[in-house]
Image (cartoon, helix red, strand yellow):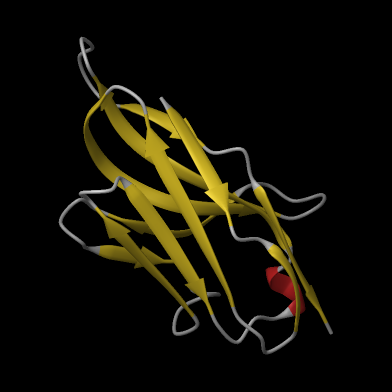
Length: 120
């Protein structure tokens, strides 16, 4: 199983970016999916998560600016980021709890990370 993230880049404050992440491999089902970020010198933190039923959870710092969505048929999760601020600068990682073929239970997988840089 692999998670492939894309969509990072450099943007000015107030701008927008859209991150995408696709899960591939021998996937039976996916439970929660989400996005985390890690800024230099800081711990990785939750940005947003979404359940298989579409229930969302956001960090207070991004509420009202970021929107997480998923396509269960395509095994993808997206993060629309609007009104970006310099403090949003970080490496963003996608995450998914995946049940693989021939295996029991769900395992947390991580994407490779994509850099988001917001200039002031």
